[in-house]
Image (tube, rainbow, N blue to C red):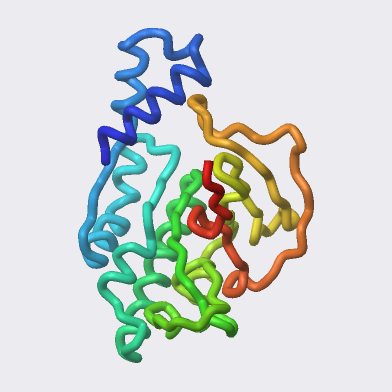
Length: 221
């Protein structure tokens, strides 16, 4: 995964900033500035976040990405058990507090990716996370329920429009309106479509339907 990440960063740098990254030395220097940690448990992740302040200072870190917040939580905490739900809520709140502290004290962006889940026919609750059913009116939306949705300051939803075109929705922001941007992913990274942005009617994050690749119409050629 780390090798794929670095290869993709190198590709973007070469195509987006050819004048800045025109030698192998420049590309290697850029890659050396990317620090990656892998964590297999929630306890390990929290321990890392608690010591993150020291690393931000010592390495002059200017961006923090947690990918993904839902992965470990959904693996360790089953929402079908009430006690697990309380523990999960406490973990999410603790993690959010640590990340917000880093963002505010050092004035750096902190990006946390979530996952998607399927809801069926009613407004999302925490217990919906693990439910499975064959009801036909299911839809895809963000995971982790209301607990996490209230912990973030700005929420961006990424979804598919067709095979190549995608869309980012500003679903929550203290300063920006509900806005949709269409884009494609090219060799030089994210490229916004010429039509620019448009406003849309926002909704509760628990019922915000997300278009995924498997929901797109399939055409035989």
